[in-house]
Image (cartoon, rainbow, N blue to C red; front, top):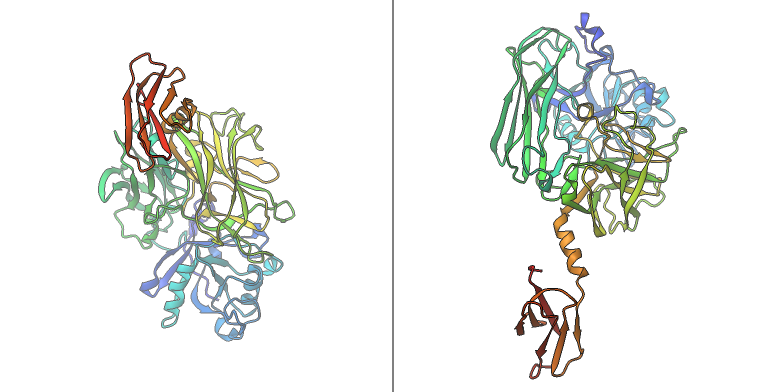
Length: 569
């Protein structure tokens, strides 16, 4: 077994506070870098060592685990290549059996750690311990399918060495930051109707910068840029600071704001530099883009090419005994001083079913979308009015939706029959609901709102699962739920048009058609055929209460009476 030799010395008092557990490709050069991952911990029913402790870190080569079944590298049975696995890091694919079973089989083959690759498109997911997890005493991590393919491909021709663990004290010069330890836009997507100028929308900028290395760092600088359509529209730099080994500092930058905002994809990038060459540069540049969109309210990040919310895996609630809870509302919180400008007309979400679902297909699966008024009175989460569970919820909109195809993990949009007008400064929850304990709702693994929540002090992703919990699964589990909006003025105009009632008679008409204006001020009347051609028209004098049109000579058929009011409607 080859544990990394960490020079943490006096850093031991800080490793729990500033820990960054990583899965890092060390060699060859082609696979170097940090990979998104999840890992097991003793608090989740696993016997695995606590990877926040740097002494539990592992540095070794990857070896693919084989058990000679049809699934081959699923690790559900004893290894047939145990001699190869022994003393190295076993690589196993997700599927067919519990994570704990896979990891235990790797451990029994002599593996010093286990890497599980997602067998479906998407990033890593949380790993349940299952029946065998408590007996697993080696580190276990999971990575996404795309990253797994990169490593497996390289393993065909070269030894692949990776580092797993807390990197505190592992490198000499190592500055960086953590996901969720830098500020980003309050929402990943804000409708342009609610972001018309710098009084309505701005992004507070800042980040925690950590010195993970065992050398002191001087002249440490945090910078940020924002680009729109490849044009740099913001540059900010914090004053240089010195950061001792194992220490950290929070650095702030001027807010990003514009006098007007164009719709588009705003690329926010933080950069950390110092007067030393960083030995681990993969956490020195952080991208956290956001949208000013035509019609989307979302916390989930968006794919720039498709403009769909990113979604991977899924979440479902369980009770105290670990049993899934069938009724599950996954929601996002929203409140805005100008909310009356918009109306919500639909909600986008993604879902998958459990691997062992009795009916694995999603086609025809029923869901509900809803809008809830969140009526607890509080300014922020530090106020006494903010309680768990939520005290006052009122449903103001509801729609049933059946999944049209078996499309696990794909973004689907359910529409309300009528757009729902919102009110200024009213707190809302936009929710999607399932009543099937085998259904997981998609979440975005790219986003982490830990620092944002501490900064804006607002609830983020409430859930309902036997009670309304304002904290949901926490700021690191971001629902791939998006509310779609339209201009409230269009809704009001449409409702006003629908409210106009006039009479045209007789029908059918043979010579004269009479139109009763029902008290409206009319400018002109037109008779239009079904091809859109105006076949007769008549101006109306101010104060006229009705009008008559001579239809003698018109061909038999269906015609539309078009009445234009003096107010332009």
